[in-house]
Figure 1: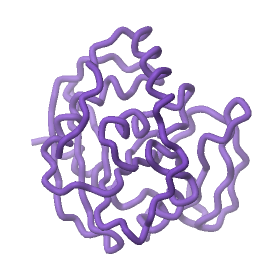
Figure 2: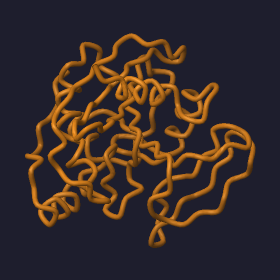
Figure 3: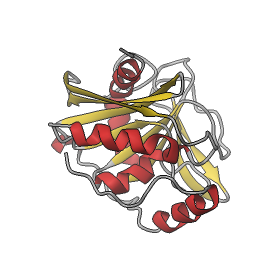
Figure 4: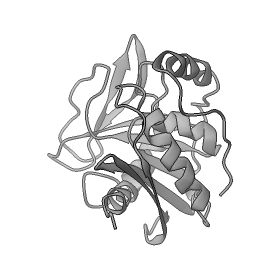
Length: 221
């Protein structure tokens, strides 16, 4: 799969923050995802072990969610862990993994944030600009923003607000189970993103594409 190489990754934290601010102006956040047109959906995750990052991208059919392709890439973990700059740590190894894809997904779901980010530039948003495809962030833990706990029933959600603006939702994907944090990355829209997340989450807390990517990323040879 061809992707846009927009910039180098080895930036200082100050330059990285400025770049995020500049790139955020290019995000498209009001483009509904036509779920009926989605044929392939990808889950994206990165694991780190012994200072080696392993990226995994798993492509599944939609709506049956059957795996058709799994790609991995390994690289040394050179960028420090800095909250808000995760993409600069994981971007290089993910870029290499994306290039290996033989099947081009219609939507990418990231284990991480989209626009739930101080500069709206979580990993799903940032790499959405590289991929030029609809991307959605699905975070497992609270990062920023305020919200009311959603109802306990599956499918319930509440708005996540940050500085007076809604950046995403807190979504209950299973009844009486901890919610996840859903936000648009790029070339998507929130309501249709929620619908797609629920369609990709038939059994467990996490959407199946992310679950499979997490398993693949953790399988070191």
